[in-house]
Length: 424
Ligand code: FE
Image (cartoon, rainbow, N blue to C red; front, side, top):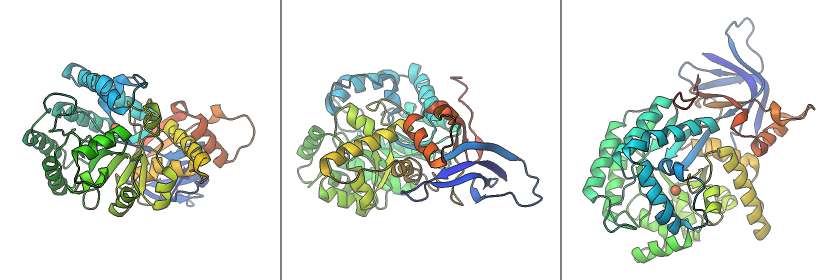
């Protein structure tokens, strides 16, 4: 057993921080939270890992990122999604996916996920089986938790020919799903960019494979108006974009699904997302950077839709999830000015970045008993003037003004995760 001491802050429910001022958190041998106590039991001689006066918060989950786009970060944002993909993203991704560069790109991404405290992450790499395998191995070595999936595209979108046949695509995906089926920390997620470059036949086979391996599914949904027009032109039989996935069995229900963006959803699609238990990855920086729009976060939370926060690098300009959180609050405030409805609060967005997105992985993102002890230790002394602040005020200030410089330690399942050596 391990015992940590500090100002423990988490959000078991979305509306308020639950705060335990300089208290003790007991963690079992297998890294799960047992209980939080005000005092140590009398006569207990167990050593305490002492972070007195520091903030102890759950580690973050980055619910959507494209690792092999990392070298492109910050570039080409004067274009909207489809032109950005064609002109910038596809060539950059091809370069970083080459075997000579793939490890360097993976190193940078893994290092920066660690740096910003996103110790759980959902990756959307390239069509290359080699890239995915390399990334999965390196993530596994890092000690962090992740889902990674090979992009499957058997239809040509920007190129003359498709990258792979349906059969080749499934064979590669099944090899990866099989190879990592018993892995605890790094697991496979079936992955399609959008229903523009994956056939119905492919997505139906993915549904069957996802059930067989108990693996989830990820894809993009309703990100950009031109994208939606193209989708509906390709699928005239569907009422909406979501149905292009649902008719193939890859839109929640028996296959755990995360849909990225979900900005221009119809009323029908919102009901489908709610009823099918679909997760939404809210990627606000990306949505602003390439002018896709602002998702109705308040509405989704009120509807009970499962939402997490994604950086969506490299249409989003940073892996810093704290920065994504404050941008999500700011964007919600701007929507509220227009609609007259309430914006989301920082507590709610912190919940999404921890327990909300974390639930995609299981009992993750909270310090309730039975949850993984995955934690960040925050020394926020550099952010405060020498007067007395409440813990709540310190949390708010950290989330608005802080960054990785205040994170002094990171834990997964009770074990400290040190800075990945290849960058240090
Ligand atoms: Fe994306």
